[in-house]
Image 1 (cartoon, rainbow, N blue to C red):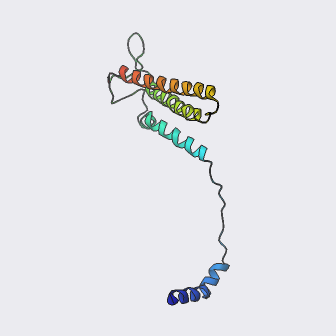
Image 2 (cartoon, rainbow, N blue to C red):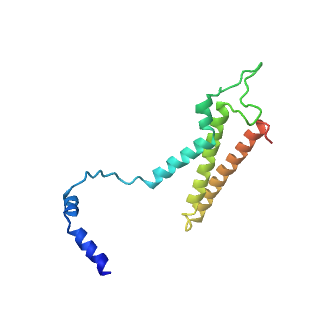
Image 3 (cartoon, rainbow, N blue to C red):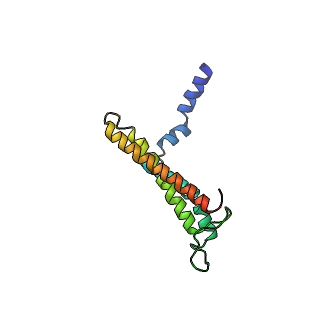
Length: 144
């Protein structure tokens, strides 16, 4: 104990420690980012990845497939996708995420049951629509 305290005392009085204490570093003050903004950016990035945004950037797919008669919006298979498929997936994933958020917000209205019920039903409707829409896209691609 006494040995470590004597080392601390010697270091505390050394010329180097005094010089470092006198030296003032440039302090850059950066404010703490809002938690809400960070969560929204992470959710947006996750939806972009899950919707196939990276594939769209790297492969530059066509929006519509040329076909005799009328254009085709979906590739038949899971290895490729059109730009419309990707945008539709991103839109449906966003609707599902908003549905989850509305369901979460409904829990804050425990003492107003009518408002809580309405928000819960809206959120569940958005979630169900998103799920059905994504399953429909997979069915059109021939995956199911």
